[in-house]
Length: 305
Image 1 (tube, rainbow, N blue to C red):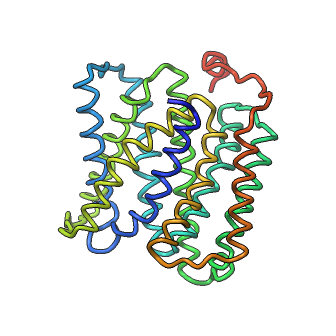
Image 2 (cartoon, rainbow, N blue to C red):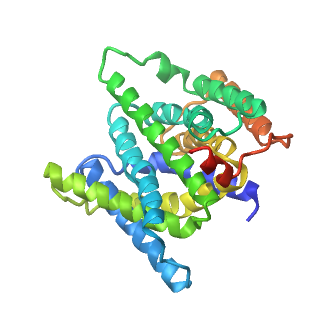
């Protein structure tokens, strides 16, 4: 699968997940919905790995790396994002999560010595300016004195967790860990952490037997989790965390289209200008350019990374 196709699938699937998440909130506690989601996703992934004859035995150290990715990417990240969605509109959550582009660049440079590409930084800045323009009415109405401030803290904390998980995945791939099996185990470890957290809190394991809840749960587990993470993390391993994370700037655009179709979103001049800025930033990030040499995993390890 080409990089462009991986990118397109990731954007469409994950962009659609913002709408699906809204159907998961209500009767069932967020952490419990996430247990259902990742148990189902992990079961599907592990079954696929076994049936396809993929290697499933790894060393204890490798399991530790997969568990670390699972903690950041398949549990803490989503729990905080689900909580944030209770305080903020889905559009504002999408805007906050798009900051993962910047976080990947900064954390990648600080933690792993990843090169900072000026072209990617410029493109990300233009794209995020576009997102801010699209959702400016929501941002302008945001009141720091209200519970929305808690939502902002939650979404940024969740985004930071996602960034750490993405960077961990990139390091795992450089160490030779296969994407599919790593995702399968990572989801299982993430589900186990969420299960332990739910039991410790005494959260009731309710279930909503309605079509919207079940359909959104299946979509989130199969498409947004199994397929979406496979395409995204494969892309991350190929082109780097900074460029791959730019897909997160495109998610709100897909969410905006869905909102137009299903929620009656009214287009404005600001929204149209914002979309153009996002597309321009996207083109700048993905355009071919000379990149500095990336240190190998062995070199980074010798430096103590």
